[in-house]
Amino acid sequence: MAQLVEGETGRWEMVIGLEVHAQVISEAKLFSGAATAFGAAPNSQVSLVDAAMPGMLPVINHTCVEQAVRTGLGLKAEIHRESVFDRKNYFYPDLPQGYQISQYKNPIVGRGEIELDLPDGSTRTVGITRLHLEQDAGKSLHDQHPTQTMIDLNRSGVALMEIVSEPDLRGPDDAAAYLRKLRSILRYLGTCDGNMEEGSMRCDVNLSMRRAGDTEFGTRTETKNVNSIRAVQQAIEYEARRQVAVLEGGGTVDQETRLWDPGKSETRSMRSKEEAHDYRYFPDPDLLPLRLSEDLIARIRESLPELPDEKKRRFMDSYGLSAYDAGVLVAERARADYFEVAVAGRDAKLVANWVITELFGALNKTGRDVTDSPVSAGQLGALVDLIADDTISGRIAKEVFAAMLETGRDASVIVEERGLRQVTDTGAIAAAIDQVLAGNADKVAEYKAGKDKLFGFFVGQVMKATQGKANPALVNQVLKERLSG
Image 1 (spheres, rainbow, N blue to C red):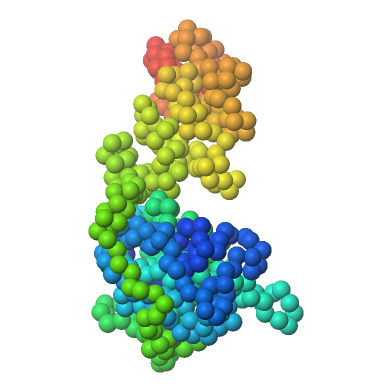
Image 2: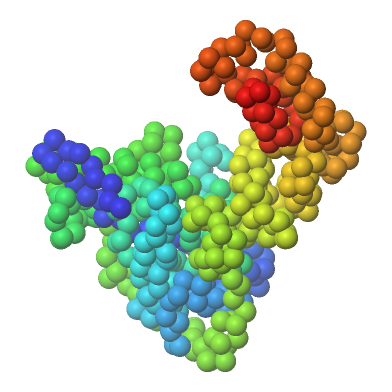
């Protein structure tokens, strides 16, 4: 859904396309055997190929090729049986070869699509233009010395998948939904870990503005150095306002590359936008065209896991969950796996509520993920069992759950040790009710005179008298009988 920008002369629409660079999960680089582990000492993972020593020739990493095909299949995209590696020529200190090995006219993956989950439960499809393989550059470090720039070539040659969307996004919320969904798919597939804070998934934002209702695209800018989903949203909001101000002021938007400055929360001009011919692309003479067999593609297709969209539909159909709840649970594979263990043989909606509201809420407060949960899926399921068989009430269950988070112990043990078992003895509940009514004769009279809202007061007093252990349904039943007598 388009998020329009209100300008002084009318409303404007954003047209957005994203270029995502996703680091391939592989133990070696795209064209060398050097390691790819994050956090290694500078220049400790650099082969002679990565350093562009004379006479060194690239050798394709088959695992990286299979990961790209796997990703393409996960994006419902066309897999090109033949693709070509090109040299993209530019000069920068952290690019020792003086060119980047990439793909241009003949990428390994063609058109695909991603289904976005919208807040109202509906979905919308965004097109994927292409996915191509390329090698990463090194990294320039400007904060290690007062007058010098240091170069770390550990990333040089690391395999990247550049995933380019169609200009189908219409606002920062669209862009955020797209990135979350793409990251989810990559993690399900096991082709990229999606850790933007480690640089293994980076995003460039292409954005132009046009009058609401127009069909022609405006001049676009490309904003680089955007390393979180929130930063992508902020960059879009800022750049949209900047372009509208330029256009409404009678100026023209320059086609350029801009840089996102997270400290100032603004974009600034970096360089004029290069065209393809500026990079003098040509097929890399050291690499033959890459040809994929039908058997390879079929084998990879058969190995695909159940992906988020299919899992979401199954959760809705098999468990009767809402689109929202199913979407939250399948957003990460570990979440979905946790739920499926916890829900086995139990009320799915009750379990989903406990997982989403109580567990995820508690984990978010401490910055933990479901993989770090002190309460296992089996333990949470056992807690739900205690609610279902009336051993404890829902209110007491929250007290028990808090203790489980703190200690990691089973719910049944905590219930017994703390004497939290629910009172279901009708006689005991009736005695507590009689005591409450006797002590509040004036309010009983008011209730019988028509002040129905006092019923809640009596329930609260009974629960207080029983330390919250009385079965709420029985309290309501017996209380109604007593007050109507």
